[in-house]
Length: 229
Image (cartoon, rainbow, N blue to C red; front, side, top):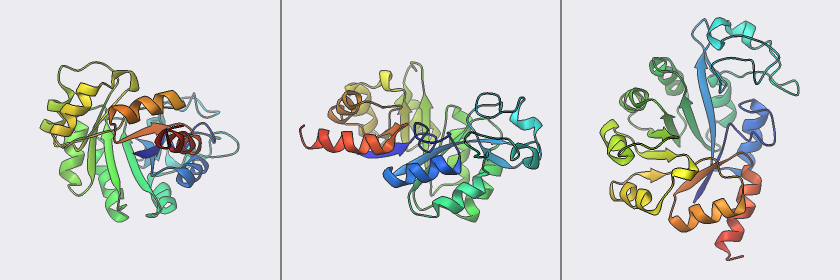
């Protein structure tokens, strides 16, 4: 059962920063980041469509040039990194999960990833079209469908899109969902698990991995679960 550092390791460092990615790499099998485009078309690593929540600035990410966005304080003196900077930092030391936050940016993101393609890479999104497009552009990478609400048949949808995994919000995780996904050769990666009991439940249900805001604590909790503690 593998561990994904959610937004790097957002419980330990400002989310989606190089510091968070570095902390996540210390304990996680994968680090997960979110990508938007700057005004000049550079993939930058930030969760929201605006900079308001995570920086001292105000406004839409797409309204900032790369130079402007990197002048913002993303917390503790950290700045918003580019996708290329994260790739350089990860550099094959751990797996990488890139979430495409807005439709239509798949080709730009794929072009950057192809320059320094991680060995263990997943492209994931809430957007069906983004999942299918990412799989077409990066057939050697994994693709995953994220969902936070009930879908009629998420396994069928994921297969239709060419995905390799489903990423359900944790409260949507069920034994039936995992069984159906595994029957169709899909990985199941729930999010976000930050407590030992949640990790235990996901483990017992048969999830393949999970995302956590504190991957170091999650690794300790998972070891206890595996040891029967």
